[in-house]
Figure (cartoon, one colour):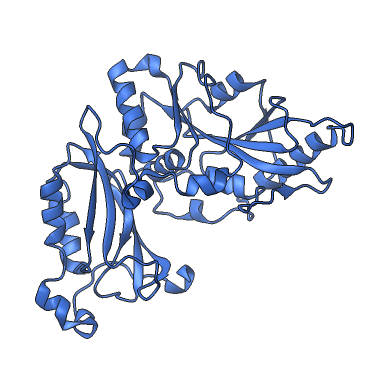
Amino acid sequence: MSIRLTGMQIETYLRVNVVSGLAGAGKSSVALTLGRQPFALATSVSDALRTVLTEVADAVPVGRGEACAIDVFVEAPTAVGPLEIASSLVETGDSPERLANGHAVRLGDLITVLDAERFWADLRSEAPAPVPEEHDVNFSDTHDDPDRTVGDILIEQVEWASIVVINKTDLVHARDAADIRDFVRLLNPASHVVFAEHGRGSAEGWPVPRRDMFAWLQCSPGWVRQLNGDALLSRSPQGLICVVYRDVRPFHPLRLAEFFRDRAEESGEILRSRGLFRLATRPSTVGSWSSAGPTITFEPTGMQSHDPDSPLGQEIAFFGRDLNARLLSANLDACLLTDAEFLAGPMFWNTLADPFPAWALESAA
């Protein structure tokens, strides 16, 4: 991890900006565009970050009658999610985190740098996600998931970004760069998207970071906006599209497994899908549905069927290219319980074949 510091706007707190991206995307080039040469840290990420912030804050005079302003830019390791770094220092509530010397710390921008030449290949990649060289116990264990892929990391970085820099645009056709931009706007319509070559041009026209950045980002992913009905874009000029699927009936597990095996590609290429779903054999728990490229993950959520905020059935947003919405919906409808099966109730549902791995429900509580 590298950190770059630069004085910018007049503020009364330290603002932590996290620069994320896959290896080779150009994070360092963007950091250099934003300020001076970053330097590497040899200790654990969160401890090193707190140490640097404390040193920076100690150098800021207090009580002189004028506000002091310093932005801190953190270059994140590929294996560590941007939110993991940000939340290790920044409180999610209204009150900012404070260092030992009393200086406040707030979350600034989460900046994701994309490699325009490799974007689609990375998204479709089933290669295992990289593992951090030093495991930091202050972070969650998401990067220890053996099933996590490069595509999963890329999607996370795009959906949880306030600024997206599409770098190396000189290596692709302008139409291809615009295609990536449109896909980013589907996945994260609230983000500010800029093009760059070798990081140059990446800092032009950036909006001022929000003071409620963490809370705002939680409502920013495109799938959340699509399910809430407030998405800004559902289709691009080059065939990128979002299809929202809803139904109150639960899925028959075996039919759903057969859909993935035989019919998932019939309606076009699904590049990303995310939402909440129900399996008939697990009626008390709401499931989390998440796919990135060719890989899909089903996990339990902390929601139970009786929770007032739980969806009645399926609520899933599908992002892809040239998707046939009618065919996709018909294929998913065929995975649901029939009317007779639905009316038979949970005791009958428990007798159905379920080929999916068991859920560790205690971890979702």
